[in-house]
Amino acid sequence: MTTLQKTNDPISFKEAVQNDHWVSAMNEELEALELNQTWEIMQLPPGKHVIGCKWIYRTKYKPDGSVDKYKARLVILGCNQRPGEEFSETFAPVAKLTTVRTLLAVAYMQNWHIVHMDV
Image 1 (cartoon, rainbow, N blue to C red):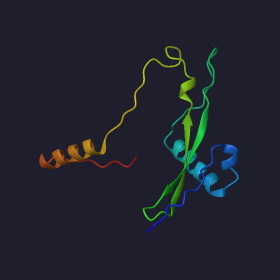
Image 2: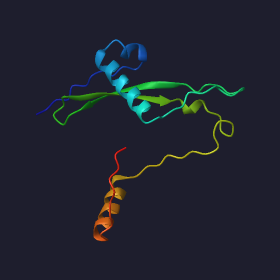
Image 3: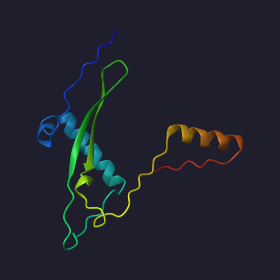
Image 4: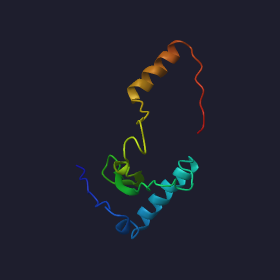
C-alpha cells in the first residue's frame, strides 16, 4: 500500500526562494515564457496601471506517491483589470483530449495528411 506524503507547497515568493528546487522550477517557467515570446516589454500608456502577477507552486507526484517534479507557474492577476478599459472580450482556446482524439481518428479514416510541427 502506498501512502502519499504531501509536501507543503510554498504560498509566497519569499517562502519559495528559500528552496533550490522551487528556484529551479521558477527559472524553468521563466525560460519557457521567454522562449514562447509571451510578452513584449514596452512603455505603459499614460493613465494606465500595471496589472500584477504572482507565483503558484504545486508539487507533482508519481503514481507511487513519490515526488515527480516541482511546478511553478507565473499567473497574471487579471481580477485587477477593468472591463471596457483594459479588455473588451475574453478568449481562451481549449481543446478537450476527446475532441483531439476524435479529430485524429477522422483524419486517419479519411487518409488525411497530418503535419507535425515543432513549436
